Image (cartoon, rainbow, N blue to C red; front, side):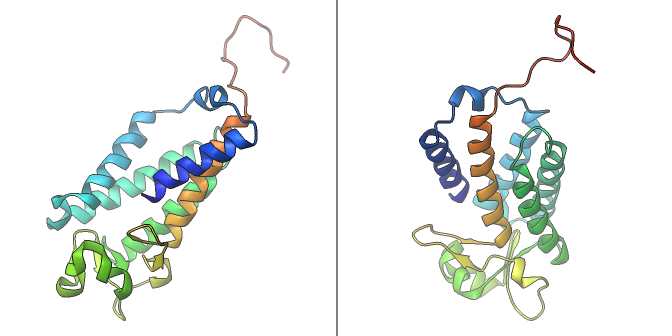
Length: 186
């Protein structure tokens, strides 16, 4: 939900600042399907019954790692993606430090997953934050009403980064094609 809100805010700011959707559409990505698959796997693991399966957290870790690598690969092409990289890396660090699980504050756990996390302690990629979890300050402890879930500082950075990529991308002209017939200054 936060990412959809980030996209909407990015588009509104881009249009309000006289950005061009054509410029945004002209952005070129390397292997865009890789990002789509990684985000898709992440979302399926988070929001489906697969989250209850043992080992689902490892697919979550791999998808976060792919997202970090993809964004690092696009630093030069997408100004603003650095925030997405930092946020994704932050989430990856806390998840790896906790054996594939994202720590969730008790207050957030009451509202997420129908409160089941409070009873079970761990569900899929989520674990209840406590003295035995690591890097809790990077876990899911931020509430953003009226949004229904809890978020980590990494999630917030990712959302700001997505909006920044959209705004900046709407003001950039499409890249020229390499190898065109026109000579280029060296």
